[in-house]
Length: 161
Image (cartoon, rainbow, N blue to C red; front, side, top):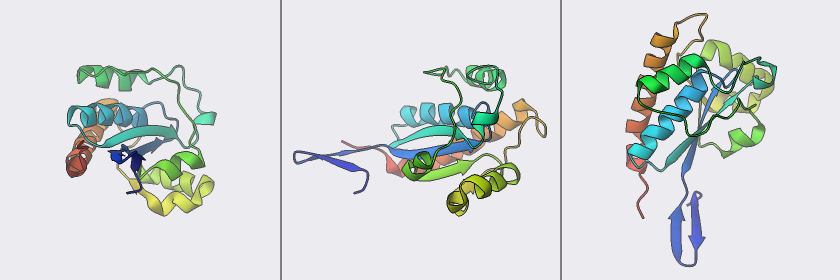
């Protein structure tokens, strides 16, 4: 019961952690995080997502969240709880996560190999390329499909108190 906390004789289940990764933590991983958390809350899943950028410290993003990601969320009637700025991936983020999902293998596997080699083979890779390879409408639709499939797969892990 690694995710359980004992309070007296009552065990309280802690939410399990998913970590979405992309390069700058500005577009794809943030969309995935916000959408996943919305669906997880809606479906009472015992999971919570966070997102980070593998090289976020080198990104020159003009604000906290990509306008494409924000428009995609609004089109799905989801508004972000918090408009935080992109966050750099740290070893502790990887260690806390039960599942790690990077957006695009061709782009992110080499980055993980270079900066976090021990986590490369513990990471799942989706096929969601950046804007230079796929427009945001198609990328976000594919990302939504993947996130919805993930929430369905995790449904048996609901939190029951």
